[in-house]
Image 1 (cartoon, rainbow, N blue to C red):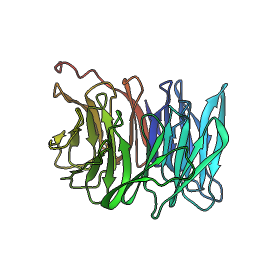
Image 2: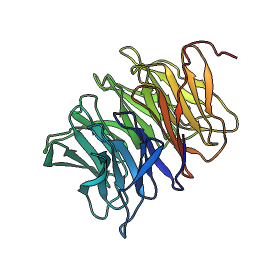
Image 3: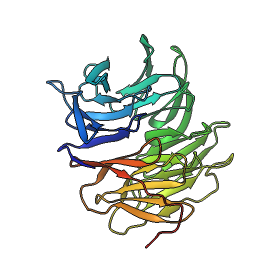
Image 4: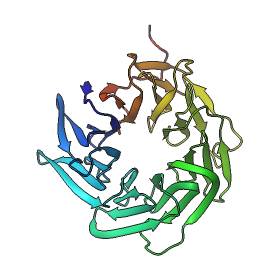
Length: 341
């Protein structure tokens, strides 16, 4: 299934039911339906219009988006009707980053130097964590109790529901632009402006450099039950081992799908399988099985750089979008055996 939206695809995601959803630079959300999609006018008007960030709602129904209009909006289909609800608004700020926890029903978003937390079960609940520098990334731990924030100089860990507190600071010089917890909650990884990752083992705070990249790492994803981490930022997809107590410490990364004429700019992974997916800056998309070594091209047509990738909850489909508004949904083949010619 292919769509032409004529707007930058900020995010391509799947809800709990396995339906694809696309958040676009024109302020709309497109929700997959049988044979097509419906449009939700989530952001727009005189204050702005672009969607800057998007996540699946903690309930698994629909998308939560952040825009340059300062609003956080929940878009979904309810009882056959298209609904858009404003969950929060910070006037004069851009909502550039979002995170959600299905475990606790919490939503976090950035607004300049602030990280905000809201609870979908309690409209009156609000927490604001102020930073010295602009917050450039957010992630909840697997239990949804702690919130990691990325900024200049390192990352910070906050208890998501506690109002007055001092965060645990994980220092590392440089600008940190994204952050992610390993699925077992043992490690925290950040992406940096300096073309590298940095990681911390949370049990003892021991940190690790994960460098060697020729470009900024704009995308990363854990897969294979958290045993592997795939990242963009190179001519191929870079895969780090995270199994065991030490994770990638003292280990080398593997680069797969190397191409001299293009860079991997977006990645995704199948949660339960050792299957990584990569989108390139020439519009191509491929999938690789880390144990069989099999690589299959899923989208061979060249085009604009891929801007969004996501695997469905059952690991069967891939949603993608590019910078020119082309998007689609692809089936992920079984790569566990040898290729049949």
